[in-house]
Length: 313
Image (cartoon, rainbow, N blue to C red; front, side, top):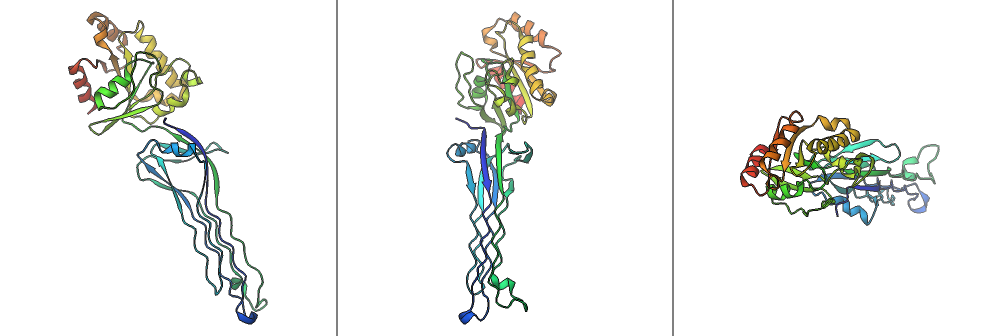
């Protein structure tokens, strides 16, 4: 199962404490400084399943700095911790709801939680007024952040539409993906990805009226359309009211985020092999004006699939 949201706590390592120590016979201070705590970084990778790691653990720490030693030796710096997250992840502060990082490309590296600073040893406090200081400084705490990690798919094309509109079948046919298909609603319970000629296609689970308010599979999947470049709006040619089907999906996009209906959209009239030619023509005429590209397609019509592939390129 693809986990696309997680609640985590990321923390930098604590700084090590400074040391109180003296040369033999108390002839002077020689306590070293504590080491700085490690930083916690995140790096974007192409693996969309990386949020699954947080189903087992949700608190992560970089290493603490070591305390200072004798003979003015500083403690070792704590090891940095690098967490790998899927590209397309938004990192949101839970307390404020503010997005602080958006992972847009593979390899992007960001500092999330700084490590604490090591404390001074008593060597640092020697002075004419205090030649043998008996005090040292504690290291500071590492930066701790409570975060929400929210994955939004980044794809060139997003297959959208009502349940059972043929989206997964098209994805499988075009890209050799292996998305589950069946002749009932909500076969697809999580987004599926496929690649054709270096173009990434995302099959978004079926939307229904009220999805933006949590009905059906809810808004959990609407967010995956936000970063998609072009919408491939699938409408079954078997539909008794293609305009209603079209408007239902468009209204949910607009309710969730008005900017989503500004995206380029191509209408795919699917399953044309299951309807007669006259009905397909009537449906296309009804949809004219909604998009300047309305393409009839069927996974059982090789020529229509090849036409669609050329369009994607």
